[in-house]
Image (cartoon, rainbow, N blue to C red; front, side):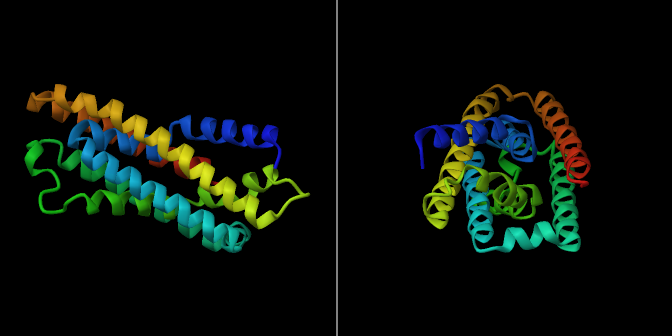
Length: 205
């Protein structure tokens, strides 16, 4: 694979991940209102979900999803409903004291949520099937290059998501006032609900 082709793929991955979407909004909510530790746990879940979809696509599952309207719509609606639920959960718990948010759940709760959000995202599967192969050099090993590009995409996404958590986590220290914390959390919950609606509209193909 040429350096130019690889560079073009990295740039594409960066631009895709910098486009506001479910991951970016939800990670900002978690980090800003519940702390960086939970935010980074969510980032790990997101990365794992992207990696699983990448492997599944390499094995042919992504093509099956893309070719099956029923499977695509099932994932599409499942992902949207889950995002709406996350938005509702954030709104409902907006008034909870920081120490009571997610008590007993541990970091695994946020890892699982990040994982599920991405496993139920049909756009990720379509990316691996429709976009990623366009950067594979026909002269080289298709399987090896696809695995390499998947790893690069997950790494780029994880770096950007970790940056979002680090920046948003700074806000957690400023949200010591309960009224301000509740207002910010509910504003972000509304934003996530809007992202869920956009997700349904943008995947209605």
